Image (cartoon, rainbow, N blue to C red; front, top):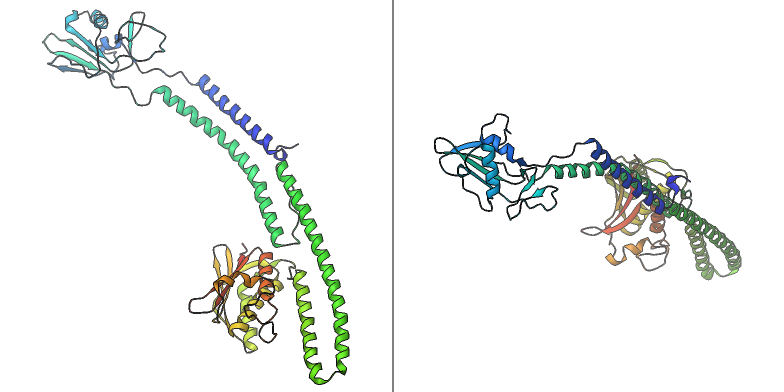
Length: 440
């Protein structure tokens, strides 16, 4: 079984183990190939040599001349045995030597130590000073040569080494984390995109079963659900087709028998029969999802808007283009034409005129149909896209259609991966906006 098809549990466990092993390997290599850090300390010999102006002494230890005897800072202490050791190395009387230091507080030093609060680590008679030291020796002229060791740094060598280890270990872990995140999120993103296509297009291809085992099971379950939904849709369409076929027969018999009726009765009844036939045909077309999603191809929305506006103007309708920008979308040309035509017809029906706007919003194509009609109450804007919903309450064919125009427009927009919404305009009127993905 390939790694990418393993369950998430095993992928995560393998990543953690690989990361832990990599971190340990980096630490071991650093320990082996890097020299051990030298602690920051000064020995009694280094201090004595520098006070005696030995050229070989550490240049970091600076000796200055002063007429005053060295005075300790707060916290510095002195120990007679340490002073005697310094006087011995300088070959000077103990009264001409001064040494003060900050007591060492380390409890885990492997050397022997003197007793008392001012203890410093001592090995083979050599004191080691890890904190600040102030030492002085009287010169023949009566003044003092004074030496002060530099204060310890805020970040010691071993702390710097530790931070380097942590940094290199984190850098070594980044490729593993990136690879794991990419392998995990890529199939999830593809799954989400495939589910989105299924939501908009009932004929979308199956969801690819790839990635971890859990995502494969999810994809298989979604494909099974999609198959059942398509089967139910086909069965519903077949049932509606049969009902429609059965309705046409009694309508035809009624129309035939009414021929012998007086004109006063025959005319209204025939009009009702014709309206019933149109309602049945429109309802069947909508319930079958017959919104025309054929082969996708590049469609120029600006050219489509210009053509429909020109055709409407040729027939005496008031349709104008107030703003237009050339934008290409990928979709079914006839379905997009039906969408725009439905919006134009709706505006002409309720407002008598329409204005078209085609513009781009980052990676989205925006198509807007506006009018100066009576508008719609805010609480009813979303309901206008539901089937058989009409703002005009009567069902008369002379005052409007069946309320399917905007519902079909929404189906077409969703089938193209877009959305549609309606808003009231300032000063009166309605603006219906369609957002579609713009082609690259």
